[in-house]
Image (tube, rainbow, N blue to C red; front, side, top):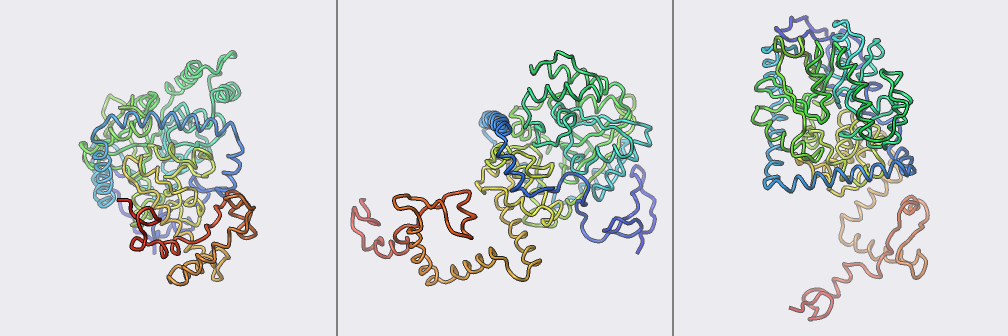
Length: 530
């Protein structure tokens, strides 16, 4: 069945031809759109285990990560403790986001109406392919051969820079950390600080080797002094700001009530991109909406403290549509799905869409601190990436990310919108296991062991017998040692990377049967001394 052609309402840009699941034009899409394969940066190219093993062997990387995450973590703690109603702010942020997710259709239409009324155009992108087509078409229509960019997770998610490059358009990152990543032919490893894995000596070497080919060359005597590096980047970027005809940005928030887009940043590059070029294109995930201007107040308190550890961010830019004689003459808003409605459809996983990209969960995660962001294989690393990426792509394409966690709960404690990431990880793990079982009718050894364990634990007598039998495991170790360091296969997979405590001489159940609270006297096990 083909879709009938319908003229878009004023201000709404025509949508690209409908595509089938295979990408062919002319067919109505059926089902929930997901992030397509081979486009963007939300899928693992290697398993997390293999990538993490390489990262753990890089001592310099681990030192960089430990120093940077520790500094940001301490700064956040200091400014959060200043706010007496922080718990109430978190609850308000979560409630606002949940209201948006429950009424997303209404707020999206309201946002479109308000942007259109103020002279902007709204484009709807089902996935990364459509979003790239829309943005590339707008840039070429403007006659531009280059664009300047504000730091944007959404454009990295869809692989926009690569799509523009294929069309002959150069995309220049203007955020300092993103510039370092781009010149180093690297990938971001942190949501807030994309070059967190680089130290200043490495940055100097990148500038010296690469910056001249991309624009203004640095001083031959450039040192690794932070002020000198910042000044070099400033001079390099200023030329690009002044000649750019088109800018591309993301969005931290969009106010449905007024059609206002908000970008929060710390360097001023965003302000230059949002005001100087003739055409401004914003790519925004569907979930970035807040209902009213008053609701924005909550997030302007939550985000800076949780991300950079500041009471407020240095630059907050807001705009609504086009203002004659002030700023860009064209404004285009691209609303991106790319797996978000599929995430919304999962009651146990949709809270991941509350995320405001603060990166607080990364900075407290013991796994991220040791492996860095590249091990996750997605532009969204750390705990939030472990729950968001598998939902955007489907768990089959990121099957081991939900297991890249200790479930310690630190991420929930610091999340400014109270996303229960540990529970979500357990939920996604079950989906991975269910999908694996569906593909393998004959259970794997691990699955068979888990089913056997479940059968044993369902019956008290079987469980008591298993506990008594397990106490004989203490004879497997070296006499005098309290831990088992080597076990025979298949248990050797466990002891290859960790020790196992020796089983006790008797189980707690047997101990409790002998020393219960009724039979035990004062001073005896299970008794009371008052």
